[in-house]
Amino acid sequence: MSVLAVSNLAKRYRRGGEPFAAVDDVSFEIEQAETLALAGPSGSGKSTIARLVLRLIGPDAGRIDFEGHDFLALSGAALRARRARLQMVFQDPLAAFNPRATVARVLDDPLRMHNIASRTERPRHIAALLQRVGLDAGLAARAIHEISGGQRQRVAIARAIATRPSLIVLDEAVSALDVSVRGQILELLLDLQRQERIAYLFISHDLGVIRAIAHRVVILDAGRVAESGDARTVIANPQSAIGKALVAATPRLIRNRP
Image (cartoon, rainbow, N blue to C red):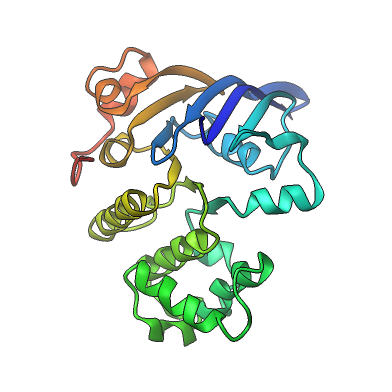
C-alpha cells in the first residue's frame, strides 16, 4: 500500500480575470521509505501540490489517499490524528516559526498538541530530538532568530519527526542554504529515511539536489506532468523540453543517493 496516492489532482485560480490551471490532472504515488521529487520552474505547480497534499487548500478535482484513507474526506478528530503522520519542512523556518520563540518552544508544540509526552517528559523528548538531528541539547534555550540557517533547518526537521510521521513534505527545504550546509542536511534526511522508513515528497527546482536524494522524479510544466520516472534515468536523459532545460541549468552535484 502506498503511503500517499494522488489521483487526477486539479486546482484552478484566476489571473487578470482569466482562469488558469495551477495544477492540471496530476497523479503520483509514494511508497514507504521512498523519496519522490517534484521538479519544475517557478509557477509549474510544485508548491500548490504541496499545499493540496497538506490540505492547506482544497482541490477543484481529484483524490488524495494517505495511509489508505481518503484524506479529503477526513475531518475533526480523525483528521487531526492523521495530520500527525504528515509533516512539512519549509524553505525558510525563520518565516515558518515565531523567530523569538525558543527552540524548546518550537519542539514542545507538536509534542503537546498531539499528546505525545507529558509536561514533565517533554524536555527529555526535546533533547533527544535535537540530538537526533545533530544538534546539542543545550540549544533548546536559544531563540530561533539567534541560531544559524543550517541549525534552524535542523530544528525544523526535528519538529517534523517529533510526531513519528510516515511522510514529510519538503518544499525547497535546502535551496536557501550554502552548498556545504546543503550537503549536510541532505545526509541527515537520508539517514533519517534509512532509520525511520520515512517517505519524502521533495519539492525543488534543482535537479542536482534531486539526483542526490530522490528515487523518482515528476517534472512539471504549467501544472501538468511533463515526464516522470527513475530520478537518475530522467536526469541523465530527459525527454521533455522542460526536463532538458532544467538539466542544462543544473550545477554538478555534491553526492549521489546510494
